[in-house]
Length: 219
Image (cartoon, rainbow, N blue to C red; front, top):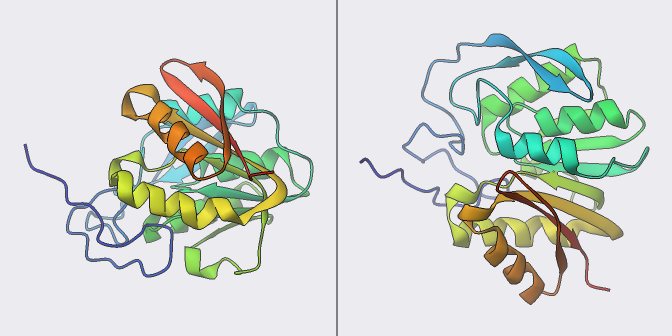
């Protein structure tokens, strides 16, 4: 089996390059043809048409982990500043934007094609409150009232930890993050690690082999 190389720099953070040779969802610039197509997916209680393409995460559907998060995380507040960390073509950011049209929603990804799709999908769904950008384009002083993420576990533990240590400190004082992680891919060890970093990390719920972890800033 061919080994997929990991990114040499932190995804969704400063300093990302496009040197990852594998055309994987955490490639900055996928090598595959940008052949876009429309699919229908359930978002915020309705079936909606979105654009997808090869070279992005879950390019033919909403993956099971994201679906668990969207269906079982608490309803987002009506207002605030929200973050979708690793937004892909946008299912989480779009759902947040649809459910909370008065909120500012930021979707961050290293994959340039994914960001383009997320922006196009936000535009087609009439969501000017959704901003899909690179990490460098997020204002440095911005703090988030809510983070929803299906984090990229397969980039490896070290890179994942660096990613979370980049963004979790940007939670507002009373902000909260909900992360969905498959149990067999280390959800319990990730929860312990976040607790060791000083965060209040608890298991919010378990569904279909996935854990939704609730993370708060230390009191």
